Length: 315
Length: 307
Image (tube, rainbow over all chains, first blue to last red; front, side):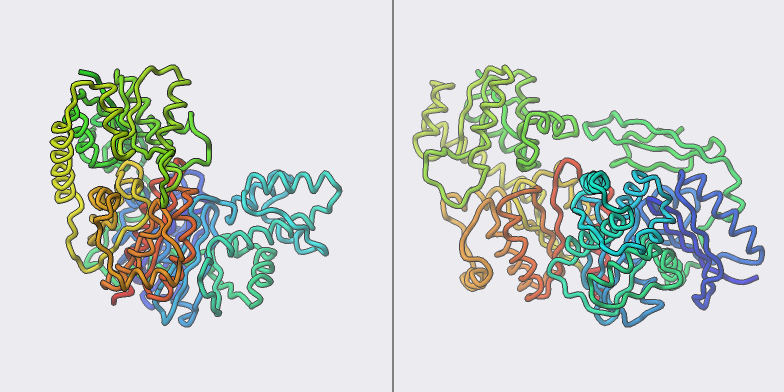
């Protein structure tokens, strides 16, 4: 049996799970589209269990937007924000990195590191035009697969300038360019460039961007965006082998550093149980919290969404 | 006795209630600001007007629906030449027009309009009101405000300390800022509130004291006092940096003229004084989950910096 740590990153678009050895080497990883947290987690953990029969989980960490809910199903030792987890994951591979960028489906973040310490960060606050869903929107509108996006865009010879401040207007801008006869590849490259511009301009305000740069998250797999980013920064950008798993790896490392005596991880077989949820609105006060209860085999195991304990139903 | 309503302002709503009662009205406190209130306000306001306008309009509608006949509006008489203030000056005037068009019948009193003006409008709706009663009302309200501040905004020093700066309404109305103070306190942070209502009132009659040294330093970044409280945000950021706070959180309603303008000088101050600043622009489409996530990350970062 090998002792391992599990790291989870419950993103808006995808769910990432990594298995990390005690020596912080990645043993296995799973990357699944998030089609419902419960189903996807069940699927992911089953895959890992099937492929690695001889592992013994000693610690487990979770991050990502859906972490509070997912942690109740899986059972985890440590819960942290994706910002911290991402920085730990990056610095594990490139300890002298100074600027970290992460582009996910619904959010983008920029982290400034000096002397191995996170000193500043920004996340997009009110707009998602600097994120993956913008690319998806455009791909859907043009009827192409998101996997083919980069390949087509890289054929472009004269990228077209597309407004990138708003994903909705950006998409309609693309359509009007298409209607006026522009080539699809030029438009797609224009979208990549506008995505990068929006990302850099909104997140890097008053920040000194210094290389080495690390670019992670789902969008780092898109070669046209990487090319645009390198053009905008005028410098090479490092794309790590595990670029989409950096947050999950960071969480696994954090859980190892703060290793519990006995892990709270409920085991792989736990996922064979039937999980269901029920949502209701609290009526105790004017907050009217939206409370979601989680049941395992019809037995209540947890709830989220409540601001206080007043409206918690015990059944 | 006429029934009067007023906009809410977080914990201070109690003090407004006291004031209304002491001035000889039956106070009709609008229900707590919820999504319903915000929806009402957003429905009848322009998209890009600041968020406080929308929520207070929602408050007033809910107050009138509960049977109020008088609105005690907060705002300044625009005929008076006032510097240092922003759109806030005109809130009550526009809100009055909007509400009248919606068919509500009420009398509007502008408090803080200064001098005899306020007494005249009070007399119009409450003819028996005496000067003595007004003085008594002010005194009682003041002690109520003090009591609320001691209860809610008392600063306890912790390992990590954060100063809150920004626009006063978003700082003080906890249903608009998602109760940021208690969220930070839960994360084990000492929270200092830079602007309070008592400060605001004293500031109106020029009774607040300022550190001359800091005032001179602010001048290097920004030439003039602008309001709401953009200038104060700069002042307080420097104040917190000098008093060894670990970080500053800047709250502002989206599109807020003053606070948006001082964003850039404030970032420069953050850089020069080496104090991390995190900024939350607030509007009706901000999600609470995102806010909590960023708060957690900010506090984690400050903790790790200290190690």
